[in-house]
Amino acid sequence: MRGYVSGEQPQGDGWVKLNTNENPYPPSPKVVAAIKDAATGRLNVYPDASATEFCNVAAELFGVGPDWILPANGSDENLTIIMRSFCDPNDTIAFPYPSYVLYESLAKIQNCSVQHIKLNHDFQWDAVESKAICRHARIVFAPNPNSPTGNRWTADQLHQLLPDKGVLVVDEAYGDFADDPHRGELLNDDRFDRRLIVTRTLSKSYSLAGIRFGFSIADPEITAGMHKVRDSYNCDAIATAAATAALLDQDWMHQNRKKIMITRNRITLELPQFGFTVSPSEANFVWTVHESGRHQEIYEQLKRNRILVRFMQFPCGGPRGETLDGLRITVGTDEEVGKLFDALKNVVATVC
Image (cartoon, rainbow, N blue to C red; front, side, top):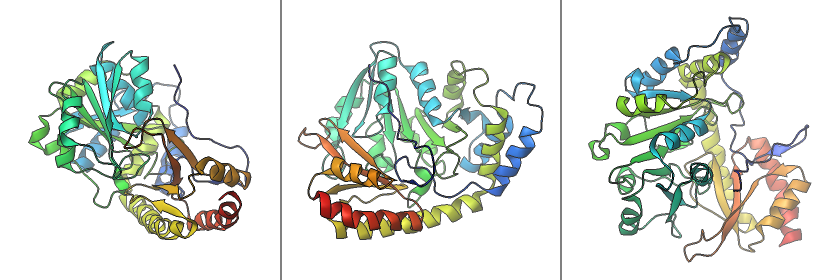
C-alpha cells in the first residue's frame, strides 16, 4: 500500500509556508506557561492516563459530560481508534471524495473496503446516491469543513450519511474557522441516534500542531468502547497541559480566528486577479484552480521562490470522473500572503 504523505516541512529559515494548514500565529502565552510548569514537574512518572483535567474543560466547552471525551495524540489518532473500534477486515467505510486521504490509508491498514461519495461541481453529494452508499458502511467519515475544498455541510445534509447500523464521524478539524462554529449542537440532535462521533484537533485554531493533541466527543457508551483500544498512555503530560491551557484561553483563539478570517477574505478577493477561481471556504485555507490548468508548474515555480502551497491531485475526483487537481493555500499572515501575491505576478506570467 501507499502510505499517507503529509505536507512538506522544509528545514531552515526563509520559507513562506502555506501548505499544511498550520495557524500562522503563536499559541496563547498561557499555553507556554503551562508547558514550562509541566516540564519542571514530575516527568519521571506516567501522566494521568485519562487526562481528567482536559476532559473536564473540553466537556464544559461542548456542553457534555467528561465521559463523552476521548483525548488522543492528535485527532488522527482519534480516527485510528475509531477504525480499530468499529471495523473488522472486509467491512466498508465511506467518505466524501475528494476529502482527507488519510481515511483511505486507515481503511487499507484495517483491510477494509472504501466507498467514495462523489462530489459535484459545487462539492455537494446526491442525497439518494449517498444514502445507498452509506447505509451498509460501518463508518462514514465526513470532514466538516471539508479539506481540500473548504465547504461546510449542514446538519440535514450530514444526516443523509448516517449508516443503518454504523457510526457517522464528523471530522471538525477546521470547525472553529466556520462562519457559525458548532459547539455540541450536532451531538444533541436526536436524528443521529447517538451514533455520531465528532473529532477535534488543537493543531489548527489553537496553534498547537507541534504538540499533537486532539479529542473525540461521543455518547459515553461509544466512548467507553473506544477507550478499550487506545494506547494506555496516549497523551503525554506536557501536551495535555498545553491543550488544557489552550482550551481555557478562548479569547486568544478567537482573536487569531478573526485575523485568519479577514485574511481569508483578502485571498478570496485577490486571487482571481491572477486567473484563479476560488471556492468559498469556511476553513483556514482556500481551494483554487487556475484557468490554465497548470497547477503543478505554478506550485513548482512558487517553491523555487521558497513559497510552499499544496498541489493536490484526486484521481476520478472530478464530477465526470476526471482527475481533479488544484492548489490548496493555507491562510498565513498578511505579510506572508503579500509575498505570495508578489511572487504570483511573475510566476503566472512565466508559466501561463
